Length: 175
Image: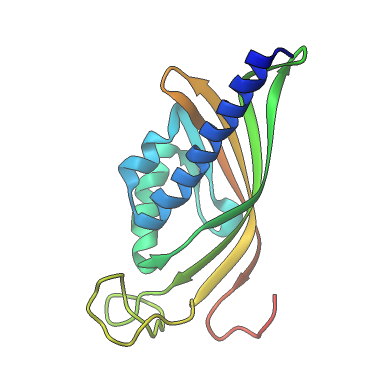
């Protein structure tokens, strides 16, 4: 591999890292237009292993928008990223797969509009004075992101969530 190809590969890694971070931020901030923009035109997401749905990214963004209203405070932590590029005879191609573990604490909305027993603020800047509470819902697992290089840069072709564990209100301590 030439020095130019090695530099391009480093730049691809940085671009993909930014894309995956953008995914977490879009979901956590409820930026559904931003979420859709992360995907290639044929991009899909599969949240079935976490109790969700599977389908085209635009449809999934709508489903997430409705579902995430129950969790006004959320924070995806995506770690232990393992990236593999398509191999074209020793040179990286225009496809890649990234597997990464996640930890996802979320606070259920409290009060008459929610279903949970959240005890802290309903949203950042809500004016409540109770202060932040422990999350009501925490899950962990692994994402599998399939990526493709497009004219606009790297985009998600697929997102698959493989939830490994979940802790909910009133559940016994432990995993």
